[in-house]
Image 1 (spheres, rainbow, N blue to C red):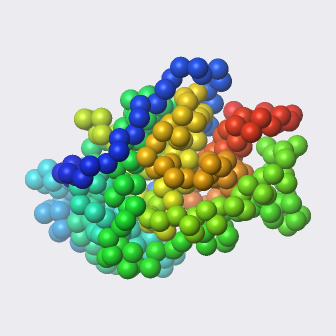
Image 2 (image 1 turned 120 degrees about the vertical axis):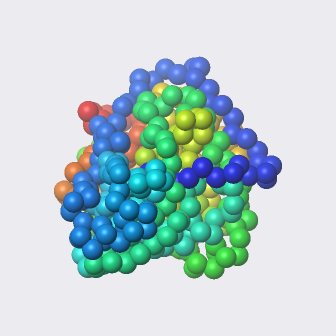
Amino acid sequence: MTGSLAEPTDARVRRAPRVRQHGVVRATSPPPVPYGSTAVRPGWADLPAGLRDALAARIGGESAAVRVAAGGFTSGFAAVLTGPTGERVFVKAAALHGQRHLVDWYAHEAAILARLPAGLPVPRPRWALTESGWYALALDAIDGHIPRLPWEPAELDAALATYAEVAAALADPPAELTALRLPRLADLARDDILWWGEVAAGREPLPEPATGALLAELVALESRLPRYADAAPGLAHGDLRVDNLLIDSDGRAWLCDWPWLCHGPAWFDLAGLLLTAYASGLDADAAFAAHPAAAGAPGDALDVTLAALAGYFLTGAAAGPSNASPHLRAHQRWSGEQALGWLAERRGWSWARPTPSP
């Protein structure tokens, strides 16, 4: 929910093809999560007075309007502030004590955004400050909306076109960006993403939506992700999903929330984004196969990613209530169900699956 209108890049990139709508026989599976209103955040009045004064000083006076961002799954302050002259900035803020992880994420995101190649449809940092025990980051404010689900094909086309542009720019990233010592997707997979092996070993309970699934095949598929990721050049956004995109008034998609940038293949991002296309009844297989980000991917890269994401989301959904957002577990369960259902459809698996989330 951040960003600014940057100049379009002059670089020539392969364009993402339009998403095909014909041949669809599945019913859509709308999410049980209102992605535009998932967050529980402090309001302007909840911030320390000293922080409010410092922010007002940076925008030229008392804020004429404060629009708190309702989307997302974190509990930090996030809002568009409009200054007395009409200038708008998007501000993220968190307490140094008690929300240190958010402070670190915001500072890391600022460093990434400042180093991304010019011309990409991404937010850029304006300034940052620390006051009254809080850290605040200001970004350019995008005037846009989270894409609607089920996807409108034109909006999905815009999202895929933006990611084609971003993936091309990050295929050979600038040295100042890689100097940030970004994590490797292969390591993240081993440490946090791959869970079917834990389920098979009895160290994690089998998620209820996976009852009757071919566990040995899920383990085998997900286990290939670290090797594939290590072999891939370039960088991946790491969290490409519908509520990290904004569609502006010209129909262009903007990619937001960048703290998880990592060394890894763009096709991993692409598969994650297309979970919602699959749930929307669109031809997600064709969209993946034809997208520039999938060029050169291993033949089973999509299945490997779907297996990994299914295990990651479904085991996360069973972790109990979240103190970040009351909607997080429902989002994880639904996302895991889409990943597992899409994978089963692709591989011709058949089992008595439990009823999906309402």
